[in-house]
Length: 346
Image (cartoon, rainbow, N blue to C red):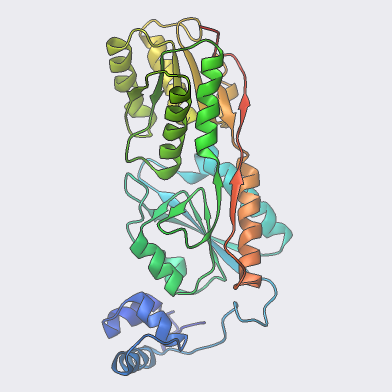
């Protein structure tokens, strides 16, 4: 579907929606000649599209297509977050780009502003412009309303380390629960009975909640009591959290960091208090970012194959575009332990 105006400026679905006073989903239903819209509303949308210079051409997602020409990649964005320099997402993007290059598919890249819990604050423009054959959405949480709008628009979507209420889309995610369980169990096997978790909160992003639940389940299986260093998933928030944790719970001998950035910040905070890592405090992380083997001591962590996550996501989207009626697919990356120098027996 392409939309142009008489002035050669592309008119978006959002323009048609605003002019006709209806939602993006309604505009999409009308332009795709789908049921569920009253005749009065349908006519109003068509009149607006005609006035704005709407010209319809068959979508790249038509059945005559076997491969996409262009896909969109939308990554979460915050003022303090640069995906290209983030060790986790930079590796995911590298995997996506590899498959697009091999398949001769153009990749359109965009950042999307999210709030502190990674919920989008606006509608993805790549979607409303209908310029791509499908979307990869990386690292954000779509609430039920946003997920419903995107589903109604008929855009093939794959979530990459991302979540949507109701699970309506294909997805590639990490087995965060089992990863959290095994990281905690590893510390327990090393003889640690007072283990805290830092960097999670009860209402954290779903992946962090799953790691927290894995931590709790592992402790529960061994009759141990949890200790929480609840704080945002940001290194700057870790030091005051660790300071309070060490002060209030001097019995703690090990900490599970909700991700590697948090684990590394935890080690630095503990060292600034005079604690030796790992002699006084053992620390394990999650993800295995590049910095994990460069810090001193080198960080033991749960490795996630981030490049493979990106490759699998790109393959899933190509498959969804080629076979739009295929059953929903959820691919799970299984993390495994990388033992380095940040853990010693209690």
